Image (cartoon, rainbow, N blue to C red; front, side, top):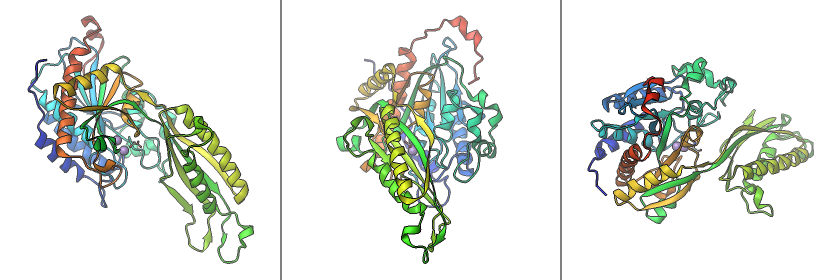
Length: 434
Ligand code: HGY
Ligand code: MN
Ligand code: MN
């Protein structure tokens, strides 16, 4: 096995991650919500780093940032890598950002190296859906999974996605131009921190993802009757916030082992609750709670949702409220492609890195891109398994190792994917069109 001495610039990777983490709204940790001024600023900085690495950059109509370098032109299919630029509220510095900054380092390391396939580095927009919209929005648009009507959906602050995209200098009316050409993708790899405890407990540096969880995102809206907290007898109330409390416990119970394993999911979480009018001496007349339900098997999520719906109608009766369950998004689980998994194994082996096969409990843009081609993911350990937290962190040597594995995975794919289409087809496609 000839050992390729090509390496990424590890100290620049760490310095850039630190620089990027400073682009945040004020507060604890990193808050870089999709389409925000911070997201725009981060995209600009990433764009300059992409150009420094020799990539030509475009921002697509839904504000995905895409850097491209050409291959020999013998292959129509491309290789792509990247992750998302946005974050949740009070996040760490690595979720999403690490996968893009490392990918730019890989492009820089490969700058003088001839590749058969074009290489695209993508900074996806709105993966988190942190304002209550559907997540993985930018990558779903690339995969042709977003319909014009989806742009009208309104987030928790009452703004439509279309307006958010316009404010971020995108052009939602050209949504269809964000879709990548059919059969263009030879392989996509996403490098990401694990966001869970498995690798750090096992003391293994590289996770090779075999599957990514399915997830259902729902909103439970409860309507009660506003009334005086002091004069209204307990038996005469229709209290939306009390009903919300029962609903939160019903959501949590979906993950408790039960007599019906086919309707028992791996995890179920309420991350957000709102109540109106939100005044201490007024009985709440409206409450909304979220339900984030996950399992590798999407049918279990569907069955658990049915179970939740019947629990909620019982709660509505008991609390004299009205309850509606609204689906925000249902994402299928994804199996990673064997050829991509094999390339990650090969690269890790070449570098002498121990690996662990695993399932991702978090969702990722890879799930969307899997709809248009083979995908794979490389994980590095999260210290104490923490993520979606300012305490998210990974050892510097693990961050650098992950980027090295990404570099050699891409080199491996550039040969192992071969060039199945004949050179004549290259006339059919215009380089640089995504
Ligand atoms: O929720 C997730 O799994 C991802 O961080 N958006
Ligand atoms: Mn995340
Ligand atoms: Mn992420």
